[in-house]
Amino acid sequence: MPHEADYRASALQKQVRDLRDRIARDVRVTWLEANTAYERVEVTEQLSKQANLALDLARTRYTLGLASIVELSQAQLQQTDAQIGNTNARYEYLSTLSALNYQLGK
Image (cartoon, rainbow, N blue to C red; front, side, top):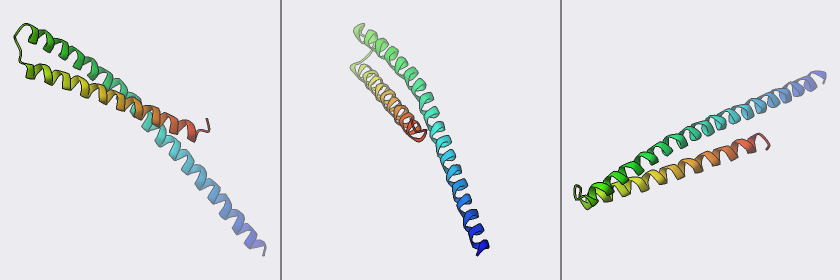
C-alpha cells in the first residue's frame, strides 16, 4: 500500500512537470509568433511607402504623357496590395499579442 501512494504521488508530480513544460513551450512559441508578426509589420510599412512613391511617380509620368493608364493602374493596384498586406500584418500582430497576453494571464 505505501508503494502505491508513492507511485501516485510520483505520477502526479510528473503530470505537473509536463503541464508546466507545455505551458512554457506554448508561451515561447506564441512570443516568437508575435515577434515575427511585429517584424512583418515593419516590412509591410516599408513596402507600403515604396508603393506610395511608385504611385506618385506613375501619376506624374501619366500627367506628363510619359506613361499609359495601364502603368498608373498597376501602380494603384500595387499600392492597394501593399496597404492590404500592412493591414493584415497589423491584425496578425495584434492577434498574436492578444494570445500571448492571454497565455500570460493578463
